[in-house]
Image (cartoon, rainbow, N blue to C red; front, side, top):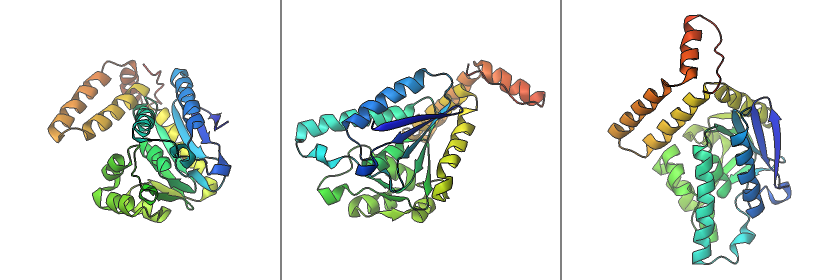
Amino acid sequence: MALLRERRDAVEIITFNRPDALNALNRETFEELEDALDAVGRDEQVGAMVFTGAGPKAFVAGADIRQFVDLDVWTAGEFAERTLRLLRRIEEFPKPSVAAVNGFCLGGGMEFALSCDVRIGAENARFGQPEVNLGIIPGWGGTQRLQRLVGPGWARQMILTGDMIDAQTALRIGLINELLPQAELLDRAVQIAQRMGGRARRAVQLAKQAILRGAEMPLADGLQFETAMWQLSFETADRQEGVAAFLEKREAKFQGR
């Protein structure tokens, strides 16, 4: 199996499971990932997801390069479009996600991590977009998401040199939010996922839409879209419960409605 799945409370932990290939992404991985997302989307007991890599060496070291040998201009485009749809699905998924990055996070692996809501890293994490070393460019969102996250300066340096950066640099430039010893990484990722998944789920979904869509709009339009999402949150039962719990000084019991 290219993926392993584990449930910890209301968090689905999805592990890339090709350690002998540094968890490189291949078609089998993508197919199993689509199935996993279908299952998580249907399961009302799951509030959030954590993605990580099997073994101590890699989160995902990139795409499986053997898949590129027979690609031409047209088949490369089809392959990229399918992958872009999958990563966009993760980015827009109604249940939030955390990338727990251990070891190498390169190429398509970094583009995958960029699609998650939150990224944290182990001390041995290494990040890069090394595609220019193969005579190609990032094709799964790296040129777009990376510069939006860390700014054009660092994005250009990483993409145009193909060089890796260490975990301390990734933390400093905002590529990851937290840096932890490897032994503590997964537990912390699950803790963050539990915090997000335990909130009012419809509010989390609306907030994600406001963030994602707003980033693609001029500020005035983004603010207007945020207002629309804010208004929609007032239609939910969870909003009523959240306000009541605050006024009554008790823990809210959200139902996801």
